[in-house]
Length: 189
Image 1 (tube, one colour):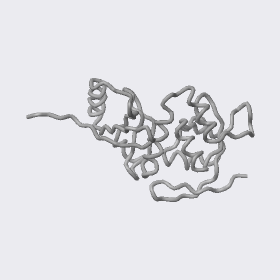
Image 2 (image 1 turned 90 degrees about the vertical axis):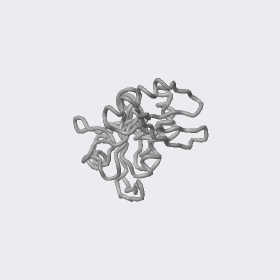
Image 3 (image 1 turned 30 degrees about the horizontal axis):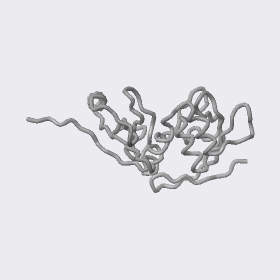
């Protein structure tokens, strides 16, 4: 039996049924239930009636008590947060950083979707605009102590500005705290 949980995002609390998912090819699939509610809030992608979550989305929902995840081989045996993180960390070394940044944006009430091109990690939608307006921000995650060449930042910034978006650097320090920096082009006239 599924129990109802309350999900708090950006100060808004919502009642949802607990979801059940299974690991399918480095993602988590949810076959029935609250698929429409999830997608309307910016979680997952629906194909053929199945909602597929990115790993960081699944980790977030597991941490909130909204999702239980099992492997296809061991149906019925659920994986805890740490087990799920360990399972997927093998295929994505930056998963922990993605999760921390994703959780931080979500906790502030933003809708966060997967990024695209040039190492952009996330697209972030202003509060209340998901499904109505395009993403306002494109986010590049950086770990403290891992250098990134200035030319690479310049290339990403040009790409983001050509899309008429704002580039946000999410820098995660060694303690797991996130600091945000907005990048823009400096022009001297």
